[in-house]
Amino acid sequence: MDDEFTGMPDRSQAGRSALAQLKEAVDADDWDAANRAVCAGWFELMTEHGEAVRVLLERAPGHALRTHPLLAMMLGLIYNTHGFHRLRGLRYLVTAVRAAQAPRSMTVSGADRVLIRSAEATAFRLIGRPRLSIGPAHAAVSELDRLDDEERESLGELPRLYGQLGISFYYAGEVDDAMDTFAKGLAVSPTTPPSSGFGNLAMLAGVHALQGDLPEAAAHIDYARTGPWTDRQRRMYTGTFYRLAEATLALERFDTAAARTHLEAMEHDRRSIEHWIAEAEVTALLELVEGRPGEALAGLEAYASMRGAESRTAAARNRLARTRSILQLALGNPDAAGVIVERDTVAGPERHLARARVGLSLGKNGSTLSELRATAGHLRTARSSAEAAALEAAVLLRLSPTSRTRGVVQHLGALLDKTRQRLAIALLPGDDLDRVAAALDEAGYGHVTTDVPLRSLLPVAEADLQLTDRELAVLGQLMGTGSVSEIASALVVSANTVKTQLRSVYRKLGVRNREDAIAVALNRHLLVERE
Image 1 (cartoon, helix red, strand yellow):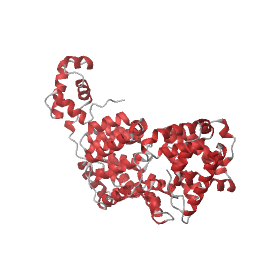
Image 2 (cartoon, rainbow, N blue to C red):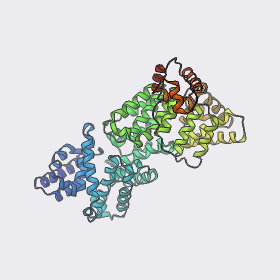
Image 3 (cartoon, helix red, strand yellow):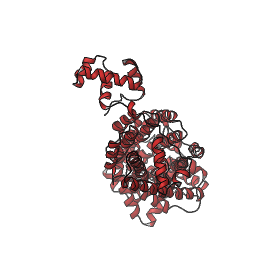
Image 4 (tube, rainbow, N blue to C red):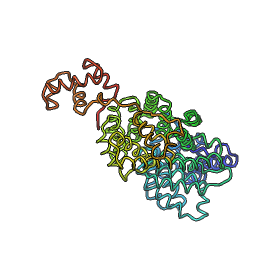
């Protein structure tokens, strides 16, 4: 729920007026009038009178909700903020989507079309279908950009409309459109208090930070600290990405105390906030930098478990895969990291990058370089580019030096210098980090490894103890049977081959029997089914 104006007297008065109009309309069963009241006081009703509005709108018959998408949307959003009642909210949001797509919704004024299309985009986003929000979000932004001054004035809070549309673009994967929309929202924000544009500013700061463009993030953070904003805006839902930006920049400096301060300053319901994945990832990164990867992974999985079914969707698993795999590497489980990458990561450049990271920890220099080659020209963020350059430099420095090695090191140094990233090289195994740091110093970029208390976040891999693909196949069969002949038949190999591979599996897992091998494999996520 948007919280930017809670407690501000002038807005409270407007909210009471809209609530009175809504009550009068509901008492009269006049759902057109109720819709007008919701349109006129949308943000004030949402932020200041949510419970009263819920009680009123629950009196609306089904046909009224099916023909007035904003009424259904309001109910859905209010329930969406209640962690234990979100499923009920989702049903109302589905109703809102269907109502928004009805022919009746196409014949209203331009200002009303903006609200309806915005509601449709938000509803798709919140019911877990973010890609479907792209069309209505584009339609709403285009309509909004075309409105004359009088129509724009009738909408009230333009910055917050742009902000919600930008969030819909962001979660649909249209990051460029999202950033453009946030910039529009910030541009039309009042420059004196009270200003409703903080959500746009927070998203700009957070996305820049998460993508590794730290100078831009820092510029937006500075404005967030000093502009016409309130402490409430900085700590509530609206300011979530601002706090994540502050925490991310602190972690790039290895300042875990500052990062924790910002994360603990956030006030929201972890069961309902839609930004939960970003929060979970930054929190896990904090604990990793603090040297506690086990706690980081446990906390991440607990958060995901609390979110229930939405954490098990393909989209959520894809977004969490990077952090999960890195934490497994930090725990010395590259096999488990590889399974997560293959099972959960969507095909594309980020999967190749994740495979390269696992390959480096497994000592597979050739396959690591092959995966990195597949990312060339396709990585879209400064963070991914820096991580790819760090991995390539690490691999090449394991081999005989060439002119290519020097070029990659120089490119890496320039990336780290321009973007101010440091975690990209901290995510190298310790021995690789030492070689990369020495090469950066020789190339004239020594300051990027000495201006922070840099240290490796990953252990040196024991390559000879990692299971081969054939050994993983034998281990998978071992889950169902201890019979050597049955395993041999299933894998179409000889019994002697199975015996040899079983001995190798037991040695590498540090066990002596099937039961212990299965227990260790489950603990290390080696037997997770690949989908």
